Image: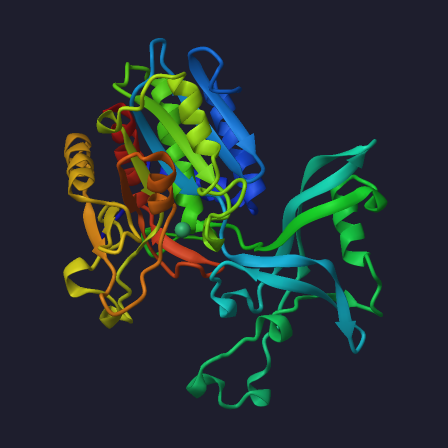
Length: 421
Ligand code: CO
C-alpha cells in the first residue's frame, strides 16, 4: 500500500481541475494564462523589459521571466497542449434512418475503442465575423450532445475473439439526436452556446471530449483517472514550476522559459507547433543580438512515459520497467525519437538529487516502433541541448488515461529545480 502524501494528493487534484478546464488546446492555453496572470505574468513580447511575460498564439503559448541583465542561456520546459480526439469536419451534419450524426476526423493516434459509449461534449474555437475581419471565440458545450454507440454483441459475435476493428469514417460518426438531417443544426447549437449568431461563424476548430470528471482513484487514491493526461499533466507541472519562481523569487543562472505547443500529436509541423519559429523568435528577442550560449542552456521536453502495464509485462523492456508513483522517467532512444544524451541525463540526475525526486529511465522495446515528442524538434529548431522526460502513465492516447497521484508533484519539483539551476 502506497498512500500518496497530502501535498501530492492536493497537487493531483489541482491537475484534475486544470484538465477539466481544458477540453481543447485553446482552452489549455486559456487555463494556463489564468494561472500565469494570477502569479503576475502579463501579455507581452520578448522586447519588453525585465519581468514575467507570455505570448499566446491559438493552442500554443510561450512564457518567460526576463532577467534584469543580458540573456545568454535558457532553461526551456516544452510540452504539448493537444491530445488525440474526434474533430468535426467542415460540413459535419449527416444522418440516416431518422438519426442525426456528425462527420468526424480522428486527430492524432487515438485508441478508437476508447471513444465508444461515452457522453461527449464539444469544445474548441469559432472564428466569428467582426466587420471585415474575424475574432476568435472559445466555446464549450458540457452537455452530452454526442456519443458513439457500440454495436451490440449479438450483431458482432466474433468481436471478443477477433478484436474490435473500427473504421474511422464508417464506425466513429457520433449520434447527436433524432430527426431528419438538417444542415447546420449542430453548429447552430454550438454558436448559441457561444452567444454568437450562427450566420457569423466563418470558421471553426471543434472537437469532442469525454464529460466524466477527472478524479483520484484506487483504494487509497493512488491513481489519477483523467482524459488528456498526455500531455496536460506536463503543461500543468511546467506552468506551476514557472509560477513557483515568481512566488519564491531567487536569481536564476539562466532565463526560464515555458513553451506549450499545439499539434504534437500530428507531427508538430504547423504555425503553432514545435516545428514553428515561435520559441526560436522569443529566444532571439530575449538574446537581443547577444550570442546564445548552448553550454549554459538546457531544453526539457516534458511528455508522458509508458509505465509498465501489469497485464502486458512482455510489451516492455524488462530493464526499463518504469513504475507508477516512482517519479518521472528520463527517456532514451538511440534513433533520437527522444533527445536525451549523456550530458543531458547527467544534468537532470544532478537536479533530481538536489531536490530529492526519484528518477527512472525509459527505453522502448527494441523491436517496437517508438513514439516521439517535441524534444528532437525543439533541439533542431533552437540548437539547445535537449532532454526528454515525463511522468509515467497507462493507456496513452485513450480517451481516459491513468497516472499515479504521487508523480505530478514529483515532476513539478524536478522542473522547478531545473529552472532554478
Ligand atoms: Co504526448
